[in-house]
Amino acid sequence: MIVSLDHVQLAVPAGSEDRLRAYYGRLLGMTEVPKPPELAARGGCWFTAGPVSLHLGVEADFRPAGKAHPGLRVRDLTALARRLEGAGYRVRWDEALPHERRFHTHDPVGNRLEFLQYEPDSRDTGGS
Image (cartoon, rainbow, N blue to C red):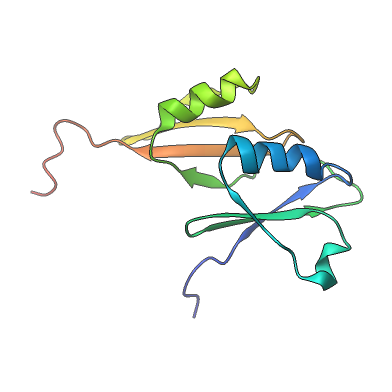
């Protein structure tokens, strides 16, 4: 029945759109997608990058997601980590998954994000 993931929505506080545009748009390089007029009045903003769509929706009693998070695959994880750290965001590396380099960080309103890059083991021959 399910054929693909359309988008992931993260809750954000009212009035945070400019900080979110700076982070998701300028820092992460995502493209802002205009919200339909019926939804634009609610606040928040939408972003896309390739097949990834993130909807950042205003929630009145906002609490940042501390555990729940999207996992976003990237091409150059090290460069992204440096870019985030250079902008003042803390990066926490996690080596728990084989064949994956990854780290967690938080967006400007405190939502947790995971960034991953596949890294095959030098012993991985691609089959048996």
